[in-house]
Length: 350
Image 1 (spheres, rainbow, N blue to C red):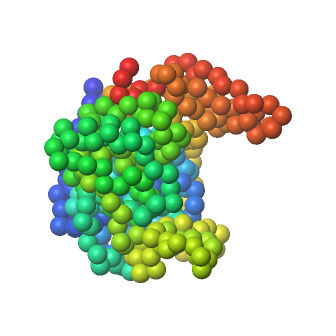
Image 2: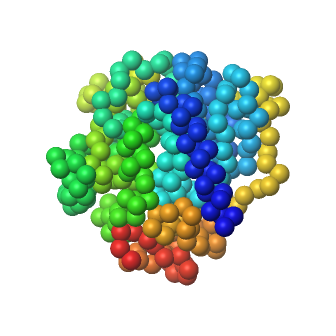
Image 3: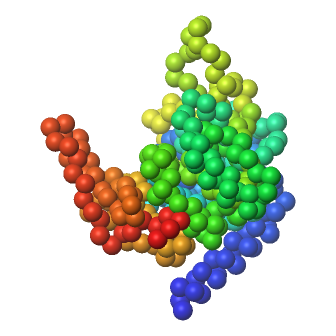
């Protein structure tokens, strides 16, 4: 009963937040862990160019408390904390948390941030699709079978749907229509995606957030295509004989892959505000190991505790296997696969 009441109160609070912020067109979702200097720098940049846009800062498993910082007028962000589930490598967890943030922001669009993003200016080119990120033609593309599978699913909602981008690129700086997020990331739709079968064809990238989000959006017939206002920062300059880098746009408002602020000194004022939580949550580092029954965050399958800190998990034929990374790091022996009992993989089929 108490769980039910808590969920109702949370839903009401998210609805209230949506109504309060419905006048804002763009909001920002920023999940963080332990990177402090770059987080401060990015929050300051967002406030400089988007002074009134709501920001949802999520402490996703780390122990750094940004709550007092968010209460300051110059930062003014919503702060939340959740148990670590390595969401960026676990699709069910990632989409549930992204959807909750979207509801709390209550804006027409959400711009997703990562600590290695810089903001140059307020964007001038408006979104043309339901989501868009980097022109990442340098990344692997979807296979033909996956495209056919997603187009078939997507046409149930949108009869004229065709896959519009075969890479992914939904990293920091990407935008999302909130309506699309609330629909595509809804557990009743996410549960229909067969991640287990897809991983066999697409490999490890299936579990990564930028690919999994693309899959979920396409599975509901929403359009995704690169946005001119987000760019990829390349560490090495383009050689004269290299083809044009369509991913690199020096005029873009957002640019991904900047790590130059990671070791900056934390300003004295911010250093006093940022604390460490007294209650430390256990963290999770495995891939494809966090699953919800029917994609419902209230029905979490057990996470294989043996591998929380030391392993990488994979779903194969409906069974979770974990590879011990310490053993894998020893070049003399092949990694040993161990069946993780009590943690069934839940894709589109049982």
